[in-house]
Length: 345
Image (cartoon, rainbow, N blue to C red; front, side, top):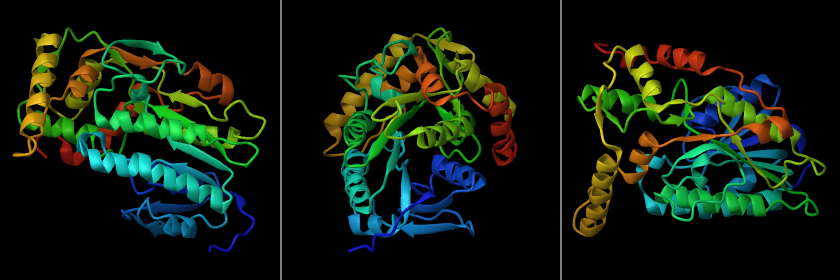
């Protein structure tokens, strides 16, 4: 059994703190005077004032050790959507989250802030200024989204003021920024292979991209606003830059900023989506015999060719959220942070 001590209001744990968002969150929490513990399957950096615990998310005893003297938990551990590993999604997003909540209850944690995703309401059709009261996707386009829906439900349903556990979910969309291991490196790799010449659809679709510092800001506001009397308990909140932008304009600005040509040729959306669907079905048929992962999946095509942007009104009203870094500034900072990915580097 773990020895129970009175938790400090300024001591928190970041589960998944070695990841892209997690590390940015850890650094900001330190700036704000928090004592921070990181729990992750791996340790990717060193900070003298941070206590690191390496362990499996499904190991409750390891979690209990990390959660001693902690009152606040940020749960932002999740496999990358592009990994397409169903077993891993199930283990981390669902089984792991249940274990986290069990450990939190046993350790006397007062607050849990979950990193969810705006994709939990996305089914591949246009969403314009979507509110949090949209229903969960009944037909999610990938297994990552399916497990994130289940994860968010598990966390929000665990909110119990009588038992002393308060929960809230933050739904960011299109996170980007320095040290991002996904969006910019994959975009550059695709450009270097000569596969960023085409625009899917007419290029007019508006989407949300959210600078990582704004996502961190939303998490901390939610944590500090959570109390038995607050309106945040058991709710989900969209956090974005609140500046919808054309998907292909954003991609072009990043590419051109790094010295690559912007895509310019158009392909019909439904043609590309249909091909992606056929490739996905083909991959399912041959899966027992051959591992085949198509580059274009229905989810990726839908994200590139439809409108999907979300309202931050609830976050503004309930927690006073306002983006700290504008989209143009966020793109400039991001591009500047990748000198090694510049064309010719």
